Image (spheres, helix red, strand yellow):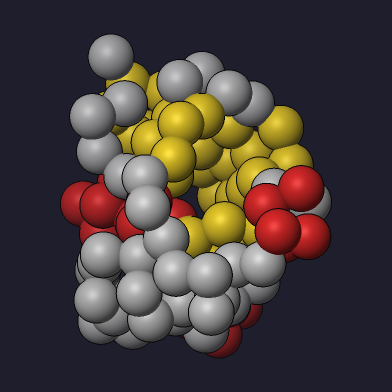
Length: 102
Ligand code: FES
């Protein structure tokens, strides 16, 4: 089942299958300029803030996601799986790519 992922601030929406992470969903739509990270929750390059919606998460590095980050929905897109339509804000190193696309 696919869900709409809206990227706040740049008026961009893409579809992401719930078996895919948000990062995989982003890369399926357009990998041009997206930083190549570990895709395993370890490097922190794909940090996003979840503004709304339901999701599940996999393991991610405590070095990049603190307990406070988790409470605020600041998570690693490679370890977040949508369970409903979600809205995100890109806050990690991917931000430059999204700013250029806007
Ligand atoms: S790509 Fe490395 S933490 Fe997501």
